[in-house]
Image 1 (cartoon, rainbow, N blue to C red):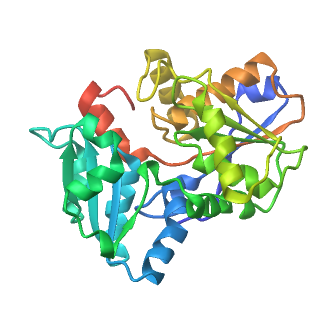
Image 2 (cartoon, helix red, strand yellow):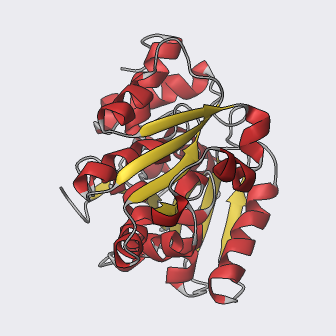
Amino acid sequence: MEKNRIDRIETDLTKANQVELWMKREDLVHPVIAGNKWRKLFYNLAAAKEQGKTHLISFGGAYSNHIHAVAAAGPLYQFKTIGIIRGERPAVLNPTLQFVEKQGMRLHFVSRSAYRNKTTLLEQLNLPLATSYILPEGGTNKLAIKGCQAIITSLTEGFDYYCVCCGTGGTMAGMITALANDPARQVIGFSALKGDFLRKEVASLMIDFNGRKYENWKMNGDYHFGGYAKHTMDLIDFMNEFKQTQNIPLDPIYTGKMMYGIFDLIGQGYFPKGAKILAIHTGGLQGLAGFQARFGALLV
């Protein structure tokens, strides 16, 4: 796989606004565990081995990229895996859940109310906790933030703006801390969720990580398209055109929304002339099959 590939995204829009737009292809860093999920798991897998754990346990929804990554990591790194899935078991498993079961992941489907109290839930399910390494929903913890710093530290050149999509905020927190509060380099997060809580969450993650506050970042909440996992045909049309012109697939949950937002901001003149912008492709492409199964063949 290509560990540090960066593609130039050149369009009439970027030319007219005299900015450079590039994309770091984190979706290509691992053959199965793509993008930020590999970054988040890297140090956690090492810690699980060092602690002598034999199982990985984590949480997620039925279409979770994180659950998909943990399941893939199991046979690759000799762990048994357990996934606690929010909601009832469907009569027919979606492509994500079919994949994780094929990887040997043992699934526990729980009610949404029970899912909220994960500590009690772990005790009730009679799991092998003594030999298990617990990963949080979405995979974000201190070791995940450390892993995501490599998105920045692996670069051989600098940019003025670093753009990343956000679900739990861990990837963004890793990038910000790696840039070490450099005011000349700004991180812009594009929230996939409705509401302002992710901004506070990212700030809290960085304080918990190293006790420092950072100023060179902002959270943009204008491009969630109705909320998590929501979409509009405007977004779908944008993604299809992007795929056709750039030959780069996006996903409708995270990267599609981010790229739509970046293009919109460029058109508004948000970025000054001469600015170098780097978008991080965090992966999530495994979810395309499930999206198409739910909504039809909307994406090219």
